[in-house]
Length: 235
Image 1 (cartoon, rainbow, N blue to C red):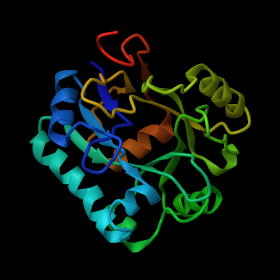
Image 2 (image 1 turned 135 degrees about the vertical axis):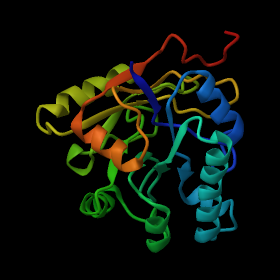
Image 3 (image 1 turned 45 degrees about the vertical axis):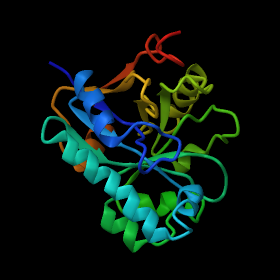
Image 4 (image 1 turned 60 degrees about the horizontal axis):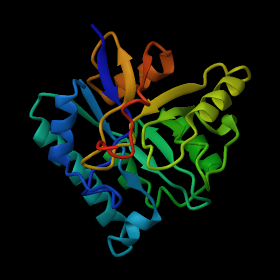
């Protein structure tokens, strides 16, 4: 038996671009047979501005979304808290795994930097930094020396993620960076958005430490379902 983990998911309280609540999102992933749901709500200047520009108010809202999802899960699905961060240098987005609430609170304006400096700090602290959807419009590809991995499949087909190009970019760089991680995520935002991605493992992912170790090990399979990653379920 294989266990399903979603690695890229947004909910409405903490991501302004999402229209599905934490509770409804959790119920959806249980219905679709996932064992673990990793929330990766947005954290960037725009989300902070929506909280009146107060960094700690944005942090409060970010982790309140996580707590609401945990409450809704009620032990029926493992819910973990990652992040999709955007640094002030450009419009690139990065999935972050292994960062605790205490860490975010201790590093005020953690987003106000560039990928090079952030990766140096994250690597020192055992935190993974994965470039999300690297082949979208307005996104810059990043020197893999500053990354732990690349998202090679993104299931949000309302935008052009060019997954085949992302996977080719990963395979090219894997030759020079053999520890480079590849991930797959639905990039869930909306009530019509069906889970189409993630990873399959032999054991359920129950903790963030376990997730980080699993991604580093490469002992998993990617879920990539472009057939159900539709722009709208009625199309």
